[in-house]
Image (cartoon, rainbow, N blue to C red):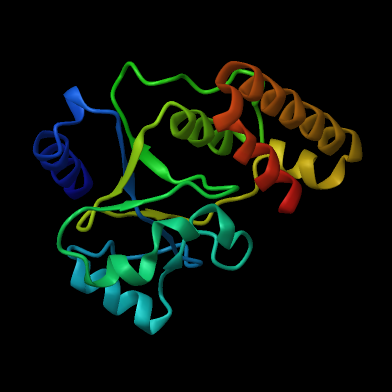
Length: 187
């Protein structure tokens, strides 16, 4: 409910209805199955310092949320802008008429990465909300991530889809999309 209130206020203040912005909701996670949800940013920061919470996917995939700049978020009191980086996959609040998720990416892998890349190609501004946050709770692995981890063919197909998507981006956005090809080759 608190996230809703912060997001709603930010949508109005940042004029989301009339601008191309993607409001980033910083994501955290706990490894505990029971957790008292922090009622304030100060309480969340305390839980981070105590090791009850971590930045999202800190232990397995830091690249996905690193551009959020959690160190800056700790002390931020106003929204701040961040730039796209390879493998960036934050949780965002966007206008209803934003690009849809690419339908090639179902199951596990690259759905959010491709979406954020498309938003960047369309010159959306990535703005981190300083007082909003979400917490991912532990759960059993999904069928699709289990398949990704255990099935080489699944991973080969995903790689092929990524390459096809990047070629489509290059054809559609031209020169500006080259950074996506370069970033992928370097990661």
